[in-house]
Amino acid sequence: MKRFVIVLILGLLCPHRGEAAHISESLHQGLCLCTNEPNVVVIKNPGLKDSVIGTLDSGKCYMTNGGVLHVDGNTWYELRAVGGAQLAWVDGFYMTLSDIKTCNPNLNFTSPITTGSRNRCIIYGNTFIHGQKFQVHGLFCTCDNGLPACSFTGHHCESGGGFYPDRSTFVSNGQICTCANGTANCKSLDPSSGTHPGDLVG
Image 1 (tube, rainbow, N blue to C red):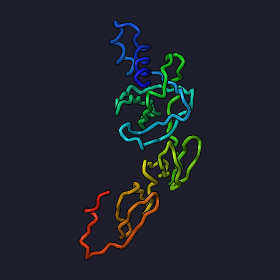
Image 2: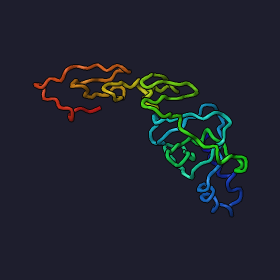
Image 3: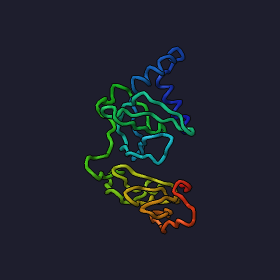
Image 4: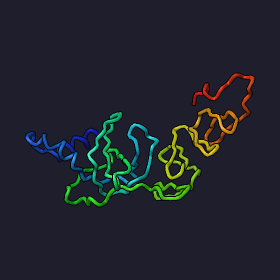
């Protein structure tokens, strides 16, 4: 299905073989892509599926910024961010190509991050405070100062002001800890054991 969508997009961009040279030019100038499903996830890094920074509503149209990446069989498009301050990528599988004239160039993706010392996360219209745990598409997430920190195996642990992935081992407040689905199980470091923080593998 994804291959069909990509072929459809390329077909709309250059219906004739003689127009193939215009593909890269159109991508650079920006495409008008519209969401074809509700709650389309937008991520910061296509290579990291847990870098979710927001969602898009169904039927909304956005201009791309010219970036196209192919990662693990998926084609990701870079959305035009306000002020160019933030990268935002969306899987082309959930988008359809629209006439550039129907796309408002001023309708750009903006991060749900708000200002403040401890920012809230806004996911699918739900607001989560810093440190609050929730689930998205089977991912276990914790709101980390405005951005969701997510894992496929379990919730992150918070300790000493930092977040640590599920099943990782870390040192915090003079203790060695293991994260178990949001709970940090800690014990005092034993100097006689010869264990050093640098020896730990998360």
